[in-house]
Image: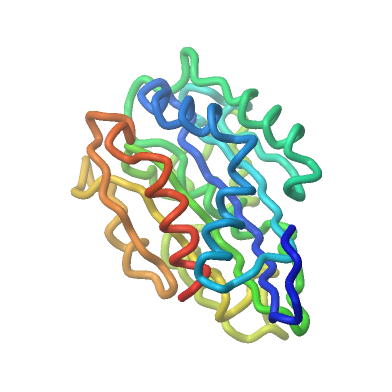
Length: 240
């Protein structure tokens, strides 16, 4: 981390929520190639905006579909502090397996998003900071509880529906909060397709507060989103 020289520092927690089905191979491979420099790239980009970073933590939640993957549908890691634990973060990214996963759409993205929302987020104290969720998928989301009854789906773990999930995201009373998300310093970055497939879409989530959305081509597996765009969106959300 850079010498802050008396400047007010930023603490950043970033949860990457990644679709781990076959079509997502290009973007996952891009992240794998850049994973060791990811922390340095974010810190450098923040420094260019005169927002020095004193702490950077990242975690990964990858997801597919309980209907086809069962217990193997969602995986999650703890937070890794960068750059000190870059090797563990690299191992987590390299461990994402897309072979023979998915095969159809939609996927269980909303359950993975809920897991990210319930991360062990850091407390900022007197520091500036952001809790950031970066969700990347080329598929529409299954409705919450739609896979209830499938192997591995714990119905009591997840919200009943999208409205309950939005209510949890929008909570702003720290005393009554369900999650550790900061009520005003949370950000959700969506890299998701437009449109509706069989009554499944991202439209409602795109309208949540503190949320920005970048449209992706569902036929390209995020192949049209480059690494620099992801970094730029993370830094933009941290500055907002």
